[in-house]
Length: 143
Image (cartoon, rainbow, N blue to C red; front, top):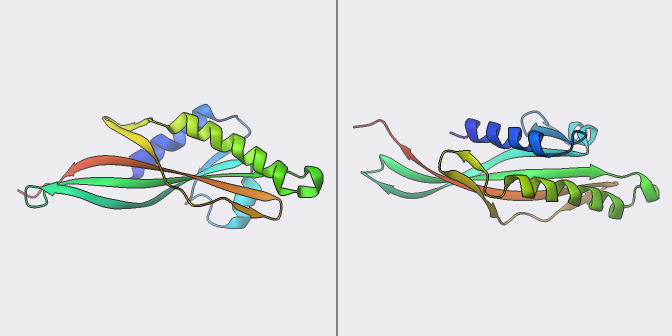
């Protein structure tokens, strides 16, 4: 259900972000150590779904899929202070936001900005999440 949308998001970010920013999926970055080795990076994560309206005894179902793009940066200037890293992560986040707002991940299915968790600051690394939702209608093959 989400594989094609994930691939479209990753491709769009790889196309639009600077070449020194790694773009990965959560499956490719399984732990914090790997994530830190990728910085600066944008990590695309399928973050679940919400069922919407259904018709035809449940055979036609609207689904909102939640996506999280975790923008990560590290900056060793100023002794690894979070301010420089925050600025670098904010630049990655701004570029990701510009690339994905309203982007069609499937025909007639676009990404819309959603509420996101707060950023995290850890040992000179900053992680800024950006959340998106895509809403699609699926049809079951039960007749």
